[in-house]
Amino acid sequence: MKTLRDTAMLASLNISLWQARKMDAKATADAITSANAESDAGRFNKALVAKTALANVRRVVNAARQTHAYNTAAWATGAQILAGTNHARYSDAMRKHRLDFESAVRDFVAEYPSYISQAKARLGTMFEARDYPIPNVIAREFSFDVEIMPITESSDFRIVEMSKADQDKARMDIAARNDKRLADSTADVWQRVQKRVEHLRDKLAGYDPDKPKASPFRDSCVDGLRAQVEILPAINIAGNADLVALARDIETDLLGVEPQQLRDDNDTRAVVQKAAAKLAERMAAGPGAAGVASRAVAGTASPTTGNPVADFLAGAP
Image (cartoon, rainbow, N blue to C red; front, side, top):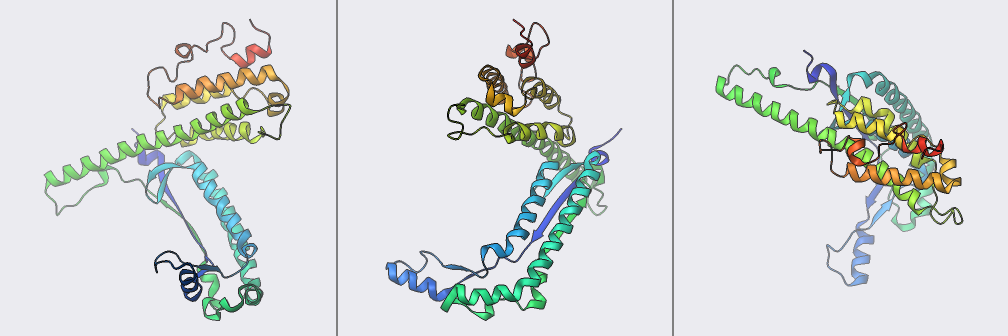
């Protein structure tokens, strides 16, 4: 019988970068004195280089963190749970992010001396050469590391110096914590999908085709939900039946229409918005609640296909 450690692992993403910020003691003291404020009222942090200098590095970091979060689910502080079936996809994506990160850092390091020169003009009397690591050291301020670790299960706990009773207690604690983390993982994924469904519901409800710029309805409202449903099998680590049913309902009720049709056709938009509202209401109860995965109980079953959007477009009564 397969155990959790046979089907999943933990993934930790650790990225560090030079923050390029430094508190200026004199500027802080001057500001506090000028405001007649107490000494701990605030602090003035100066930006050591222009915002654009590290923009590409930060863009890559943000993309890597999004990929990490997208492909994993909550587990413990500092680590997310990753399905074995998703490891190859995750590793390939993170390897590309690492290469992009290293390239962006090389570009920054190459231009680093010029950024210091520009800072002399930008910061004026606040410029301090000692605030800047020397050029051949600055690269050490950046790192990118993905750590893959096994999941510890109760059967892994074998400390011979402990009594059998204490070992049993420790194993029970590990098992209980894993059960809770698995439930929290399911809840985490559920909330991700719920937010997407609620976002679609709200954007459809607020869209006015006569004033499209007032509350725009963008393709990302649909594309983001579709991407979340596509990754569900990989991040539904517990194999939760409600999440499986939820993905099916979203595909049939909400994703059968392209974004442009939702903008152009008032009736279609109204049908999908109503379906999203009903689904969001059911999801509010959380996974495992009675009736969450039941279309019939929710009152959305159709006398034809079972898909209210498809039936509407087909002209079903």
